[in-house]
Image (tube, rainbow, N blue to C red):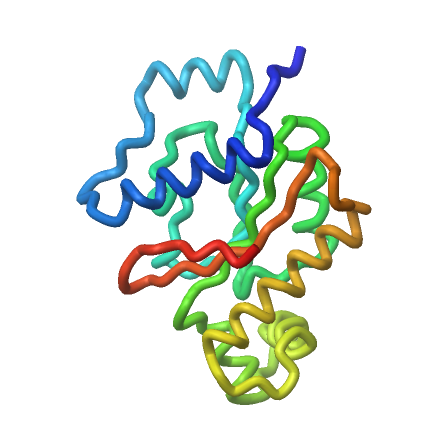
Length: 187
């Protein structure tokens, strides 16, 4: 039987509180104990938020939000772009794990956004930069380009999964300031 999860607004407040703790922290206070590992192994996971973010090694949602094992369902892909794989992962966490909040977390100094703004890369990277270019157009300001990219992913999730205002599942965008550690929620 699925446990009842936090509401979207309760999950958002928990993320904000966790980020405030993170700003001055030197270690993560999230529970990574043997006990929680065994509990989540035996009883399953009940993450309170889905975080879609970049693969950048400086962007670690479990640390940024001071979360432990089983608390966040994290989907990472360069440039936090959405395709059917990421959408399927969001859908799984919402439908099967009862998670009510999705946060698309962009960040400053994003290499994928920079690549989309600055050139025409080849290889498989082009699939990522083409998605980002569709979001940012001719935008030259890095912060604004990152926010436009987040907005596109938020819209893709809402549209693809048929999420409307008033639904239990909420989707919002956020921007992580790597230098300060602060998360700015965009909605």
